[in-house]
Length: 215
Image (cartoon, rainbow, N blue to C red):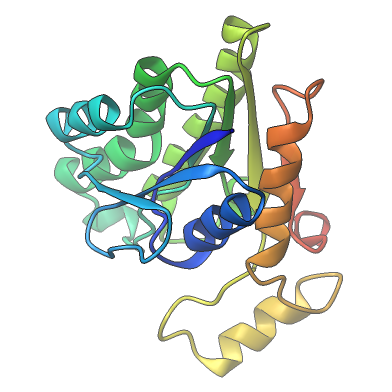
């Protein structure tokens, strides 16, 4: 039976991905920091803290598939970014996936990116830097860890709306998506299942964005 760890599995995309693997018959460790999952085998850790991350790895042990989904996404203009703000974003979005891969040594890694890495939005530069680093890591480790481990990524477009987003902004985002609709979490979960089973695919970023990258 396949064993999977999904980070940030309590809500939104992480929850959908974990549920998809569970429905596929996998044993799924559902990581969380504050939002406790009610599915899979919940395991808590603050991934920005290396001691907490190491304890998580000891508890989980060996996994076949690692889905690096947990991420921070805060809007902070460049002038207001502090070293602490910057370091926290990098620790969660880039450093944690790197050391989870190192410590767990899975045979399949799926990193969650963002189409906005290629289409940056003002006020999210420290976030964009962290996700761009994760994209580079995907390619670098795909080469370094082959042939034992495959490393791929998913770059979602506009799938789930953040809390508090106005109807006006939502409509603007919808119109900026060539397929003319929001994807929801389902297509991202489908992509994760595909990459977990695609035995001759590595070092790739699968854009699941309704064509947003082309707009």
